[in-house]
Image 1 (cartoon, one colour):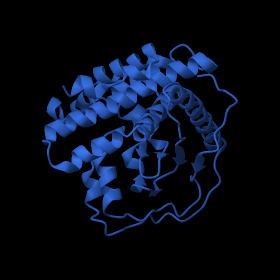
Image 2: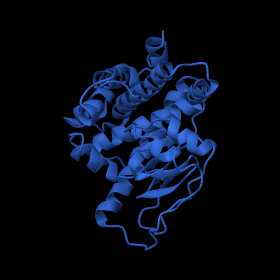
Image 3: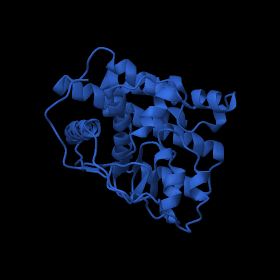
Image 4: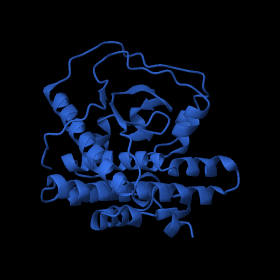
Length: 285
């Protein structure tokens, strides 16, 4: 992936600060984090089991960031800036104003508007504070546990996926899906399909971002799109279920199969058209 000269001021790097613990709060924030099954699809029971009683990390020592970590910060600032510029233009084309998301880099745990951000959750977007939270250790797990080759662009894809959730939040999609979850009018299987549609639309937006940003800045190098596809397929529900339980239960999918994740990412990349990304219409009919 080719780097650009753009950098965002909306990146908060909390790595190395010490005292990285965050109070685990109950109520709506905890439920949001548990309900929105973020990129890796972590087990929400570990979050809900806190019961809102509160706990914190014991890590207190501060440390200097390594040169590699500082480079990661610059990379994330660049990707954040390219998301801001691309989505501002796409929104303007559709007559809507874009408000940039913030990005927090952390290690172990940190406070978020949705409760405690933990490394085990993987990268996620919190609609309450319009922020993407990323513990970079996720990418080691993506490579070691799920067999995806991690490249700069696969990291950019993951971030673009989470920025896709921010787009959904600005457009009111996340409000509607949260209402569906809390209404009591839908079965677990129906809610799972809503979750799949939500996640696949974020993959579509990641593909759209890739196309539009490359058209503007020529960021893509040979193999970049394939590395994004590999990352998307690695965390497809069918692949995760095969690895974790040895069989696939499609009714319990929350993010979509590997094939679906590839399909919608590529649809966003091939079309570059925001209007082509109505996963809800196609998947919930």
